[in-house]
Length: 120
Image (tube, rainbow, N blue to C red):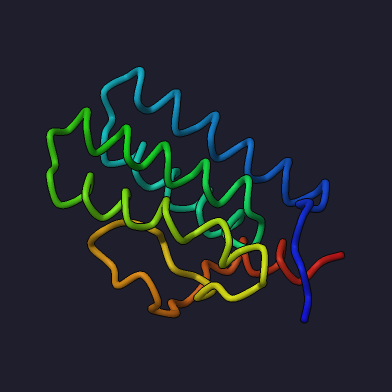
């Protein structure tokens, strides 16, 4: 069994860039774009417990900010199980992480992120 503990440097850089774009969009009240970048951060970091959990934490905060009850409850559930599933490398790749998507659904990965994930 493979255990994921630390995100590779090139993925961490891409993950942080998505979070910067998320914050910038949020500050400018571009909520759709902010969510888009949050989903991308989730895809990049979902195989690593810290980044995966942090993406869901930000999604929970976003849901609270938007007063989206479904998102809030969905993120609470994901926060309880997401990190340990990352640790044991048992995540549905490509899943965008929002409550609008089943938690175990595999999804297609955007091509630019797929190239990142394939590179060592």
